[in-house]
Length: 301
Ligand SMILES: Nc1nc2c(ncn2[C@@H]2O[C@H](COP(=O)(O)OP(=O)(O)OP(=O)(O)O)[C@@H](O)[C@H]2O)c(=O)[nH]1
Image 1 (cartoon, rainbow, N blue to C red):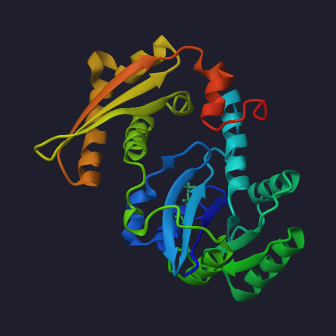
Image 2: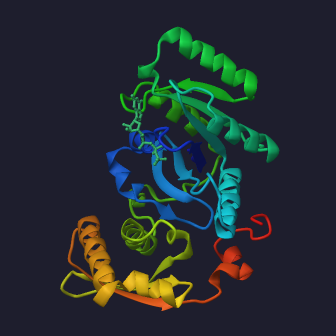
C-alpha cells in the first residue's frame, strides 16, 4: 500500500471562501482542527483523508498589507509557508474576477519563482453565468500558468470533491504526517494557546496581536478527569501588560473565562485555566526570536 501525504497551501483574498472550502474538504470528522493553529511557518487549518492520501491544509496568515516590521516578517513567513507546501491553491471569487488583490498575489508568485504547482479554484460559481465563468477561466490562465483549474462552489459543494481528488493525487509518496485516528489531535498545547490568543485578539486593540504570544507552559491531567492548563502571555512592553490585564484584571478575567469555556467544549471535560502575563522586552527586535518562529528577519526588512 502506497501512502501519500503533504501540504496544500490555500491562498486568496480575504472573503474568498477559504474557511468554507476547508470545512467542506476536511469534513466534520476533523473540523475540530479548524481553530487556527499557528505553526512556525503556516497555520494548520485541517487535515483531509482521501483514499491513501493525507492532505494537510495550511493557510498563510498576514499575506496582506504589511505595515510594521514584524508584519513584514510575517508576510515573508507566510510566503515561505506557501513555498514549503507541495501544492498551492489560489482561491478567487468568480463574480469579482481578476481583482487588484488577485493580481498582487500572482505577481508575488512570479517574483518568488514558486516552483510547485499552483491550482486555480474559482469559487462562488453560483453567482455567475457560464459564459462569464469561461471568460474568466481564460483570462486567468492567460495571466498565469496554473497547473489545473477548478470551478467550485464551496458553499454548495459543487466541484469540491474533484479538487480534493486532484490535491490527493499530487501529494508526494510519504507516510502519513498524522496517524489517522489522531488527526483531530494536533498538538493540544498549541491549540489551547491559540484559543487563548484568539480570545485576546477579540478583546484587544487590533494593533496588539502580532506583538503578543501565548505559550502553554504546563498541562496536567488530574485524577478527577479535569485538566489544569497553565499559559503565559508574553508582551513586549509594560504598558501592554496593563492592557492585557485590564482595569482590576477585568480583561484577563474575561479572556480567561472565554478561553476556558471553549477549552471545555473542545476537550469535553472540566478545565482549570491559569493565565499569567510576562513582559519580554525588546522582543520585536530579537532576530533570534524571529528565526525561532520560522520568521526570516532579513527577508522581512
Ligand atoms: N455564493 C457563495 N458564497 C460563498 C461560497 N463560498 C463561500 N461563500 C461566502 O463567502 C463568505 C466568505 O467565506 P469564508 O469562508 O468566511 O471566507 P475566507 O476566505 O475564509 O475569509 P477570511 O477568513 O476573511 O479570509 C461567506 O459569507 C461565505 O458564506 C460559494 O460557493 N458561493
